[in-house]
Length: 415
Ligand SMILES: Cc1cc2nc3c(=O)[nH]c(=O)nc-3n(C[C@H](O)[C@H](O)[C@H](O)COP(=O)(O)O)c2cc1C
Image (tube, rainbow, N blue to C red):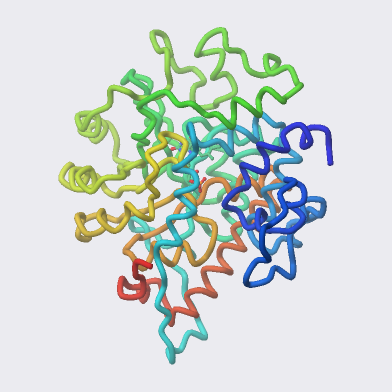
């Protein structure tokens, strides 16, 4: 075990709660807590943190990448990625939420060809698995967003690029070989948002996804604690003397006048912002971060093209509510008026199938492809996305669904 891992051992084990790793005998031994009784069913193939995968090919599920990423990426960067908020109740709820729902597989349907393709806002993709916007990807691997774009291209996934990208939107679009959606952190200064949107549209982005759930400060405890274990000089890269200096490596902010701005996030945004945005762009507008049906209805009423049901991967608040719990009320209230995407906590084909059965058009995935990126760069991203596609494909066959349209509400029930 490396020195860094040793130092963070307690937090690391806590962090792994909810992952299948914690169930393993070797981990229990590491934690010094012998299981009080043998597990049922028996665990004949416990995972062992000493035996990490050495290549993406070896991965059996997406979780296999997480401890490799932990070992490869500096503790503060890993902490930034892994962190939830406060007690991380929402973080755990995002995984536990899927256990509240069961699937009802149907039989004797020809599923020899399971077609995973979907249309999202008029464009056809080979799968409903979308690459969620994640900022600062060069902090996980030197090729950052470019490696992710190439990984997304391999499986023809829709990629959403963060405002906090460390690679230029023009280069990411070229690497993806197709338009990417642009995720907007608008800030409280209209001119800044306008500059981002103008550049993204010029780069060929057909959609702007406005993130609306970063309206507050946040206590990222896991990040702050892991940062204390980082022995590198963070000031060498992070110049916190001013907002502009701090944004230096964030390509979207290049040449943009940030004067008067103290924060890149939006605490003052209202529905008026969406009207103003509509007036300056031909891009479709998506709102990311909807959690209540009332806001979903308002989005449709305000002419928004689609919404993403998201709690930001439990990185904005600690409400304790998972998105898979929030999804049904939103689908019901929206009544098919606009497409609904969803993210936060999706790790398995069965998770994705549950959301699709409930009525989601597509599912975005965040941390898993970052684990792949941090662990192995582009091949890691590719394998994470491939594993998700394989699991989704197999699960569709099990459900008796030859196409995504065959995944219907009757196939999912509250447990
Ligand atoms: C390290 C990290 C950075 C993120 N950066 C952004 C961002 O810049 N903009 C945004 O809208 N969402 C951002 N998100 C949230 C993701 O888009 C997505 O909502 C979330 O990761 C989904 O949850 P999951 O990680 O459990 O899959 C970020 C998530 C992570 C893990």
